[in-house]
Length: 559
Image 1 (cartoon, rainbow, N blue to C red):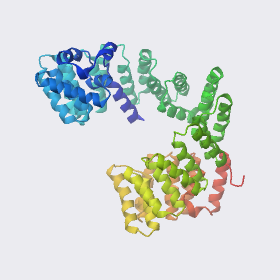
Image 2 (cartoon, rainbow, N blue to C red):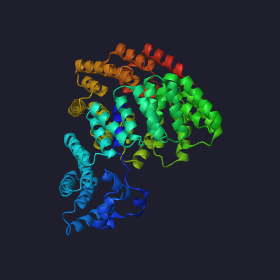
Image 3 (tube, rainbow, N blue to C red):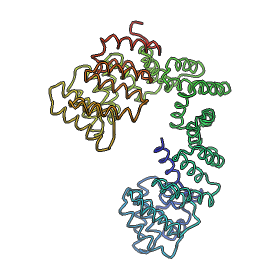
Image 4 (tube, one colour):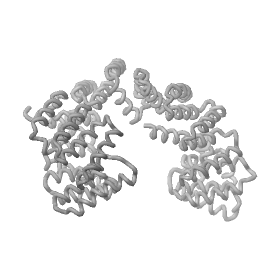
């Protein structure tokens, strides 16, 4: 979460006022002569790229503008402003070296005009950042601030760099300077809040976010940060209020709903009561749907369906609602109802091909492999660049004993992403089944190589080591995975698979039990998992499945 927050903040800190509304409406840079460029240059913020992209979003226009400026430079080669524009366009085109050369020339030519030169220093700093040279980027911002010490955006940029370099004290100095120069701009307070979050000073974060929200009451991201800080302090009521406010005022984004689910896991009764109160006023069904989603995301699919039913009574069925209903039925093993609603979703929005993917998955889990293959074929034809589509089809083909066809699809998925670990693992398993030991070994080794190269730990590595007969390394990897994610239900399910492959029934059952205790409930996938095939006749396995299926209201096969 912290990395995501920092990335969002850095993006925010680099935002600056681009052009005045009047300039946006009247300027066509692609046809301007140099004297006009000289005048318009002064209307831009320190972020020249943002400014140009505002009025020239089309790459063709950017090229035309560049050609125009370069032509003008033939008669006026020492025009520093023109060179600054050349540098900006080159950066927009992803040509950092050319951009750097042009910016350096502009800085030299603008030495008698410090305010303009400051803007080019800022531009060159951005180019150095693109090249991941933080030191030179920082030095250019020092120079920019020396030339234009009263320009607030320069301090926000430098503060952002300091944040990225984890020099928090210096970042704070610059952010406070920004606030002193631009007290009505929320950026500084947002920066201080994020700085506090990164240091786990959540009370300080909330104080600064309060100030930011006063200045920008319609910025949903601020409410999201404040809600997240309150969650860290276990102030769930306050967090809920912020999230509900953003949803009610159309300020929410995907991250907001993720946070809502986190809150649901900790304080569902309170959240449910608050959303019901809002729903009693709106009577739209929207908040009932949110309650349903919250129940679904904490694994209570039967509870979710109760609310989804109320939603359908208040509003016409939409593809989005239908797909959620379908998924809820899928998770409790009612595939007849799941398929009915996913077909409704497809009918309501035939352009959303993800519904076809979902249908194929439902049919696969229900054991209707040939129908699943037909839907998967359809999905791959419609979305030929989706690696998950090929992976899904490979899984289906494997169940149909089309091992070479499965290998071909795993290979296609790998072609689209050469770090797709599970595609390598499953392809290796199919190679093994066909007696192609060398090819299988190469794939297992590739999984280990990828993870070692990225200094990463993943349960896929344990699978690879086990398949290679390197049991000690597999067990060590399992231990490290548990250390890093002790509460991950999916992890324990995967570990049970590794032990199942080893033939260690007791350990497989123990980890499966932990997975179920921690909320794993994808029973149909579990029962299609070849790694657990040896467990299925075990009385303990059968009793465990029965216990947890009853707990969540899973529809038994004989119902």
